[in-house]
Length: 562
Ligand SMILES: Cc1ncc(COP(=O)(O)O)c(C=O)c1O
Image (tube, rainbow, N blue to C red; front, side, top):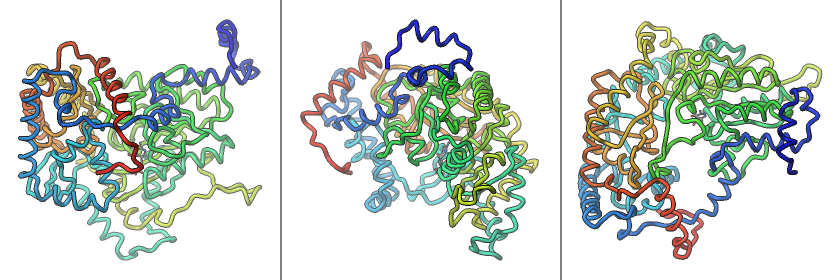
């Protein structure tokens, strides 16, 4: 299989047409070179490593000095931790009690409470810093828990909450009213389906539409149709990108049955374009434009925040140039270019990422906010790729239906959402959106720098990520300080803040006051006072050492205990 450097160099000088005659090994080599060097870029290897990774816990003795700090700092952290636990137990008593009860029955809740922080710290955090996952009401930009605590909501309900909770509440009522004469009739359509489909065609600049119950299903449908209509087998996704939880788009950890027909390539890379140009088996390329905020990195959850190496940064011009090259290549090679806008659709502008980056895809998936408060998934695409049957081969079909697709209440939820996009009030919200949110991020960063806090944020419009500027093993503690300051993040913690667009400047300033206060409290409690010689590299070495030690002391379990 190995080729000499001279052969590779010679081959890469050949014109593309001649390269078709190149050996399969060369095409394979190009593919290997198009993978990102990190484990995220090597899904199979990551899967194997994940299986082997020994679980271990830092006991009480080591929990507070995992970075090798001195005894004074350790004592300050220990006292701060238990004081916070006492305050949480009082302040969130009812919410926590409800969550603990729900956790006994809800596997999902068991999962998320286990993965809020790096696993080494998980047991002590779980038993002392309990967070409520049950809330009772929402209004404006706030959610309220069972104890009457009000939080600024920065979770954005997984991105669904674009226009503010009050908008969706009204939208649901309006959709209910409009759908109730027909009620839950399925199989035949509510008349609203016509306007919804027509509006979606215009917004997406695509020819046809299909309805689904979730974003995952919409992506599944897109990929299946791309395969059917191109006759090719493989899916290309880019390193770190999320496209739902089904098999073909999740080749790494998290999926017990890794797919064989998925290539994970490096994002924003000419090597990926080169590899794609040489392949005959690629049916479609999936793009999640949210990756523009952190190309080649997975969703930045706090459970992987083991050091301070998390980086993010949005370069609109560079990402646009990348998408344009990808577009041209897909056209040249007959590959279906799919934009997965389930998360980002309608967040950057009413025309979604296609309009924002000025690049037209062959298919686009939407979901989340498009349901106007109801669950949904939508696929829009060019007719030639949306076709599910052939006139000349009646048995050769591509089946994809679903009992609840185009449910009358959901369709009406979408209709009211789509109509709202045309109102002056919503149009005004989109005016100068990036300037507003990027300006706000700059203001917060300046305040953090002025206070000498080792934290910065990176923003892609209303989606932000927190970065940590000095090496530390305790950055994940910030999520608890933020919660105490009245800021509610989603369970993935500080890696993703999602603002709804009804955040006013006043709201933003109030959030920043609380944010800075939370950081100051964390700093006072010595979590960022690491020994000066600590680096991200030395943290990783320490973890490796702990892991080896853990291998001899930890018994394997078939199920994570809670
Ligand atoms: C880009 C993208 N695609 C697909 C999905 C899956 O959508 P759902 O959770 O509705 O199945 C998500 C969910 O977060 C997403 O962000």
